[in-house]
Amino acid sequence: MISNFFNKSSDKEYSEEDFKNDSKTLYKSIKEGNVKQVKKLLSSNRKGGKLLTSVDDLDQSPLMISARNNNLEMFELILSYYKICKVDINNPDKNGYTCLHHFLSMSNDINPNIISILLEIEDIHVNVNNRDLNTPFHYFCQKFRAPNNGQLKEIFDNLIKKGVNVNAINKNGESPLHKAIFNTTVAQSMITLLLENKSNVNVVNKNGESPLHYCVRMGRADLVTILLQYGADRTAVAKDNKPLYQIAIDENFTKLADLLKDGGDLSKISDGASTELMSLLQNPTLREDFRKFLREELICEENINFWTDVEAYKYLKVDYFRLLKEFYRIYDKYILDNSPFEINIPYTVKYTVLNFKKNLPPQISPSASNSSISSSNSNENILNLNGNNNSGFSLSTTPNNITTSSLEVNSTIDPNCSNNNILNNNNSNLNSNGNNNNYLCVNSANNSSSASSSNQSSPIISGNNLDIEKLQSIFNTAQCHIFNLMCSDSLSKYKKKSFLNK
Image (cartoon, rainbow, N blue to C red; front, side):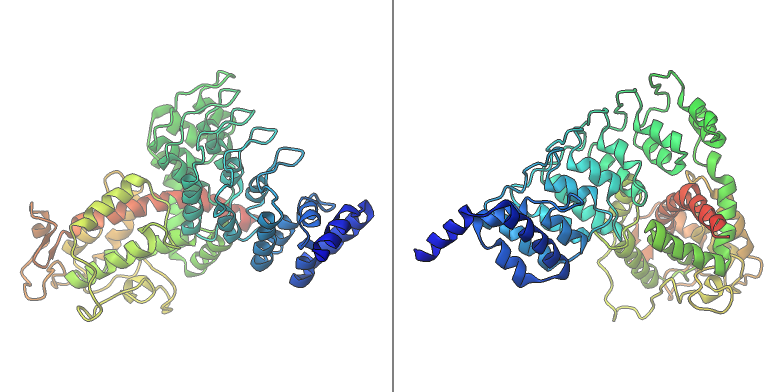
């Protein structure tokens, strides 16, 4: 009782000068990780509540300071005092920003786990508007940066579970989809997730501009392609009455204008880039430099890794157990939801893979087959340009044991892929030295199997027979999509960076 009395007395006499001194001490203690001092300062309900809502010279609250220092322990400690001191985590500041607004605004500077911790709070508000009518989700879509697609999808799904409005409109009439186009690192994945969760692809802002308008003005052919796949209206006209293709011409994106005007496919804007990218990928030094750029700058190294893994898969000796085991490895690594290396492919492609997988037997245990491959050590004659096992792949070295007939199956290209000519021209260099070994037999006991056997109308699995054409076609569709994304966006950014570094 006496202790409580003195505590109340001291709270009542908490002067403005004491508050300023305690605030400075608190900010310093948080930066230094002094848990004991922070607990001491926040232990009084009245003092603690006032200190929690204070801001430093940069308008940062104690919770924000701990987040910027990426100190999870300190962050969780300060967060716990919001409940102890009965401070509402949803209280807005003078500009209408709540904690969630702030944290999703600076999500490219903090540990994504901090956002996950915030979203675990039961009564956190995800649809509150600030003065500009932006919700926290607007900032998330524009600024979030993740080390992999799996982490992005995890936080995105948590927001969806919290009831986030994917079609919320700010005072400029912009939806989160508009904002996602400005994301400098995960725009492709973010836009795909939004569209998969019923974001309106043709929503317009106050100037009548749809997300497609934003993409065209920025010359983002990769994003234009994604939006068109989900039903974006290429004939939409904003208040300036300019057709989209005319905007592309004005911005000097002539090939993009052809795509929008004629209703063509991505080949109209990527044929030249396809040849350039293929040449880059065949050069070990440039390929590894490009891989490093994707990893460090664009955070999408999984794109080139998936492409090379599928390329290796095309030349894998057709053996039922090896093919099946490698299919599961690629599926688990790149296509499975929440994988750290999940690639950004349209849901229609993923759905096809899932349907195909349903007809396959379970994954083979290691004892079932001693044959397995990985992108770094399989088919070394194909994948190695200079004797270095880690160099990736090459389409210029001809293995002696590959026949024309085997390539007709293993190099099947999806008819809808825009880069058939590029890929087929490279694959055609592989069959000049083939011998009579038949690699189309899927059962070592039956060497009489031939290419025609895979064209019969048989089930996907029949004994040890695997529909190789179907399997390879599915992977080729995904591979072509990833290749096109690298052509239309990643390559141009890489070239620009290389030019600036000269």
